[in-house]
Image: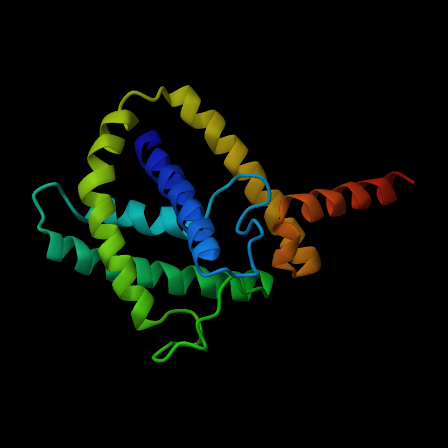
Length: 186
């Protein structure tokens, strides 16, 4: 189990980095931390790539990896978006301005990008990650799981209370938590 959790964390972190690079490349005004309050993770990437790793193997060809990666990543993106929308009434992304989108949750252009990126990650990153995962002690994985779970709970509570993804920027989010705790103790 710790191996799969390491895959999830690694790909969530790489997804976070990819989001930051993309925002910088397109000069997006939206450059705040998103997804979790404290940890630099985008779980949708971790979920998608962990499933891709489970469904593929080292002998699979690049085309197969791209097809599986595109389909799984797009399905994960749709389902995670739906979850955020229904559970927290928030949207982390909106593709409604892109032709061919489905409910603003997914679009064919990004499905193709996810396919290519997934195939490359499964071919280049996954073999090294699989070797590293075998060396992580179960106790270390448990500590990471506790930190991740705590961040999910705090981030979820913040989203439920305020319905504002901008609060997941580190400064405003921690300021809100601090202010809430001060008002409860007064």
